[in-house]
Image (cartoon, rainbow, N blue to C red; front, side, top):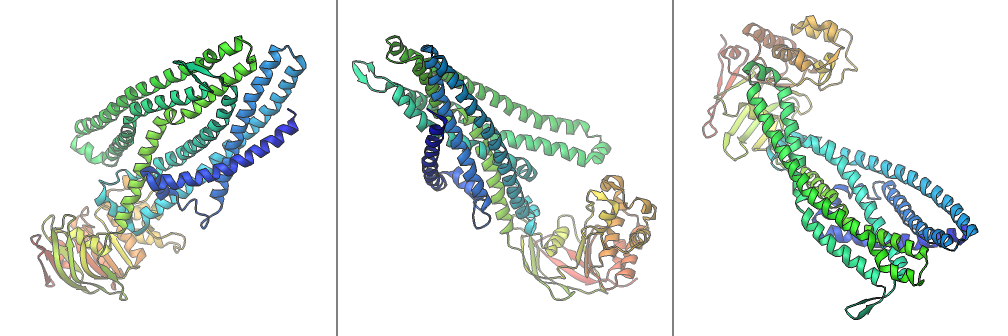
Length: 598
């Protein structure tokens, strides 16, 4: 066949295959989404990515990848025909025919190389864009409405969110592409090589009955039975791969905690206990790894036996016809090649079952994470509204996640001249009250009036972001518009003047500064932000009484119009507040009483 005829024939073949594949794909997507759990999971994660209303490029990418995949199948068919032509020329000692076959091979090989490289680039670029979109989707949903914080109380639904965002998204996108392309290739290639094998097969007599085109039926029966057995052997891999992801993430989290609390562990001489804990988690990882190895050995061993046994089938079956000169050497070789290709295509699910098991685990983890975000975002918070710089609570009830009331029907109005000190026994809900006022604690009811965009919360252990000391001082505000000399002056006010020359040094300042210095830096943030309301949760616990007194006096001098609520145990704090809210911790009781000036 001339190369012009090959081009025309291939073009017609691709057009027909393309239309049929698209129609079959639409039907398959609908069925998978409608009748399978993992199909519905995939659609939940990626429906918006493929929506043409959002962007037409992903669907255009799918169309191009489909065309390239069908092109690969067509090249496989042409190579199969080439084998027949080349071996037939050798058998007939047809020198011109042989060299013509070599020229055809050069053309097919060149097309194959170019198609393969272009296909690799298109697929990888598609996966990268898919990862970018999915990362942004999940990251935005996780950060919005403070779902990253609220989901902590739902941690049983989605552990290790960092792994799910970073690792599982990558695995999901790349494995989805691999499985989808492999499936399309297998299905289309199965149809194409079934037709080739149908034309090459002869009849076979079994138990006195003649079966026409017997080889085609044999390969289908053989692969069907092998696939059923492989699925039965490999099914535990789904659970084992899910556990592998979870246990590795738990072990990594335990290691991070040791690094985070290194100083406390060192003071306690807790190396032995921590080492025992880490070894326990690692033992869980290794135990599961061995389970995966043993199960994979059974699965892979079975697959190897099935694949190697299938190699000799076509030669044994076609040998009689070849020796009786019913078929040529080219027909025999093409039969073996077509049989092997068809067997490999039909064995697609059997061969990728271990990958599919990992994929199912990834789907479960990502959709579980997505569901947790939904649950966190749907948590109902107490009503919050703005009324200028006013800070007030009306009928506020605060509960624990189990429904136990920590505080009932609290009414409170905070004035700039009368800061409120919150005291009470441990566990009575002092910090939880501040969380509720901040709008991050969902277990409560009532009304909160606060200056939404002009409030600042100081925790006992301030958060210092990675970066420069200047960025840590301004957090969460940008530093671009800071007047010259302002930051140095602020450091002097909070008695951190020795850090002037380190303001623009990048480091992990939470490990360099003492807790007392970190708390003073947080007071510097207050002076920069100048909020209408400030909430201090044991914000001076690491300072001596002299520093504590200096910081509170500084607030009253620099921020006379700021409404302040403080949580603390020290009696020395009373002199800086005009009212005291005492939480009883039993049945949600509370008392609000003025503090007499000393």
